[in-house]
Length: 331
Image (cartoon, rainbow, N blue to C red; front, side, top):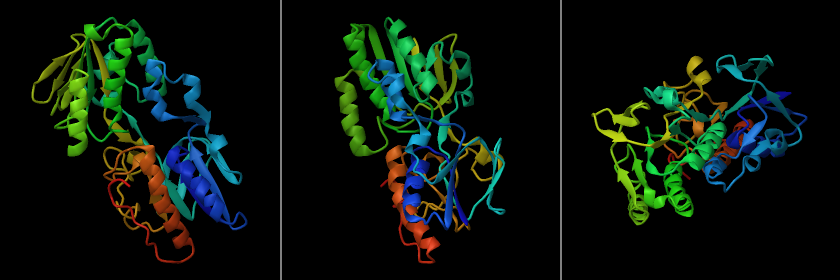
């Protein structure tokens, strides 16, 4: 029996489990997917919870219910990935050998990477990229009586690059509904040279910010936060004060990838951006937020990358040429 192992039961890993189980003979191939827990969060919903558009219950499901029959779901944290031995080690479920490995280990925010940020986290600094944080943000908004709301992106890349702007526009709407918009100044503070990553989108989104009275402060490279003084400081000494800071902290890949020497210093797995494979590993494929590919870190990208992986893995298993290619950016 040959073994396909998938790391991560998020968007990318779940899609691949469904695709591969349909095409691999269960008498010849076992499929195992490994993740630290059984809770699937619909991450785009995090953005809407603070404004009461989505409820917490609506964005939580069981990961297992999205996996097909014939896939073994192992719930345990990863502790090591050894490409040379073709072996995965978990914290509580032992080791797993593989013939083919698919990695979809994702990324997460790290407030602790910014000096002073953790001291004010969920006090006067709030986020919406984690489940617990979006709940705290909802509480904070209900207590907000106006003032200066600063929405700050610490650095790129981040999950769903448009989400911070979406938050600004939702805040404009929600504060208007609450009768607080005239009492609130919204500033969008970004390391980018404009509202977004691409010129055409930046032009349109800048116009939208002007219409909604959202002030853009570009080229701001966050160095530290003083939550006592309610000030963020850039590396060049520029300061912006706030009453409520909505923070998008640095995003990092999996710490396990760093610990086992697979990831770069930020935990992202280096791959060929066209084949989605690490150098010299012909039976390993990587997709989703955990790669260093120059793509948006979003479920849509993982979805289209999965088509590339599926086609090439089936070609590899059949001894054929792998001809499917990503365009190396976004699909």
